[in-house]
Image (cartoon, rainbow, N blue to C red; front, side, top):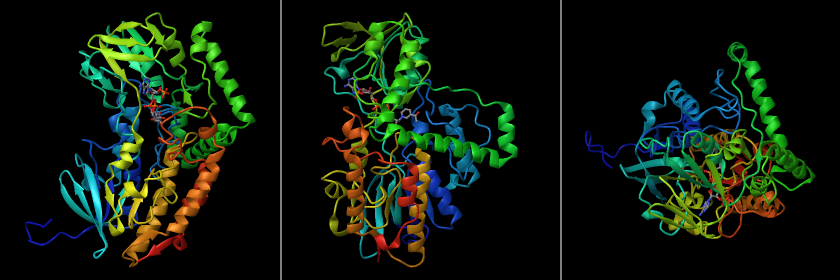
Length: 492
Ligand code: N01
């Protein structure tokens, strides 16, 4: 691309960050603080915020406590609730971006389409739907959960009424007084169902697998506490540390491995179910038949009560087909619906497949990952110099805040970017370091709750391997990845 004003090619960016969600914004802030530039953030949506921009369904909130689900270097003293609602998190991200001077760096409505490594010039040629860009380094802040997955049910396109996904909510459709069908019972469903049950004339919830649900105990944060957090930063840090360790204990409590404590956690969830659901038939339908932790453990105090409302039906027969007027189940129930809501999650593998990267010697990322996704510390891949991933393979969490993982990764990437600033043209993980790391993950996965827990989930790939979650505590990841060990990298 030439600069029309000067007729010369513009200077390559030092770093192109893809995605303006939690991770992309965190990376941009830390790069600016370190004086690394020129810098640009591209974002496919019309606004920043990533998942918190896209997921605007009624009841959308975070199931990780607010003081933990925020950046340690961009604290907020006055979170309204223990678990912040989506609009408040989105506002936090906007304020944070503004306060750190990121707005001029963010280019919205720009989709990353792929990139090719130029060995001679040691830079990436990036394709976007708004034209090409060159950058010495790329940091992917794309996350894994932004391509909505729609179920492959015959007749899906034939439905005559409105039908949309929780991650692409159609706010123009008024659901009050309507017959609504919700498909799916994951983290998004448990939040949206109580809201819809309160306004729909009838809500039918289609459950394939019941989730494990723990009490949420959400509450407004008292003004007194907010005041204290405002005036005494240490009080806020202390609260964050308390919440962090409380969640870390979950890693020990069987959220990553089947242990004696798994049974105790299951007992707690069963008591939560028994207390809320009096009808034994309904309770049986809602009782999971796999180990807790195998799928994401949900928290809610209003989901079970919503299922007991007279205008709500739980349908457990599998869906045979969708018709213009509703749904037909395998056991022959015909259900007339006005609206269908897909709470059916995300296509994680599509996200990574669509990265469309061509690295050193023409190696494609899809080829490098033909045997399954994997990256050194979840961040770098041999053959792809100066390319870094935030929330890449095996760095999601089932027990604590992913923002803590992002912060570790941002520090690691920063170390690598500083090596480039010191004069290296390229930094690339050594294949043997990557292989050692992936071996460690594989060994750790062997007896993990996801392999041994007897369930299927988006955590597992088509071969049944968990390439999405970190199999240990956040502290263990911090020890492993916080500093980039230069011995594991080749500097060119
Ligand atoms: O999606 P899911 P989600 N017929 O994949 C069902 C994050 N998140 O959007 O369990 C019938 O968990 C499927 O059934 P089954 C969080 O990381 C965070 O709810 O496969 N049903 C399941 O019940 C989470 O893990 C927050 O048998 C079908 C559901 O759809 C991730 O996002 C809030 C079906 C999909 O559940 C995804 O959660 C929300 C079919 N053909 C989400 N296909 C926070 O608060 C699928 N299903 C931080």
